[in-house]
Image 1: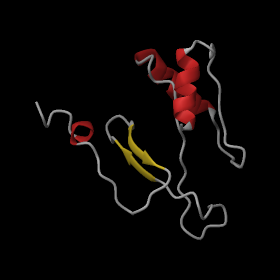
Image 2 (image 1 turned 90 degrees about the vertical axis):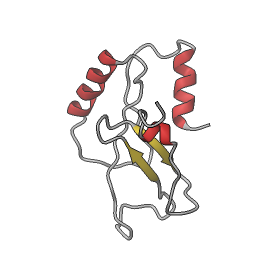
Image 3 (image 1 turned 180 degrees about the horizontal axis):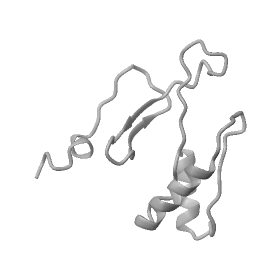
Length: 108
């Protein structure tokens, strides 16, 4: 079970009653979370199912802040910024995407 799966399960049981910010324990950052939180709240008003907003910052291979075992492959919808695919343990440098997710009008 992923952290997202666990949060959805907790949310579905009505245990979360307020919005909160969750940060990994090994993160050190100097960013203003206000605009990110406001963007999340705007998305929540439009779609109550939008319960998670994630923030990613690319760290190039060899950068001192990058963990050697934290490679991910991430695919985003460039129109909505919705995550289409997230692989935290990639065995290759490639992924296969569900054609319906990438082009929802493709099969209609």
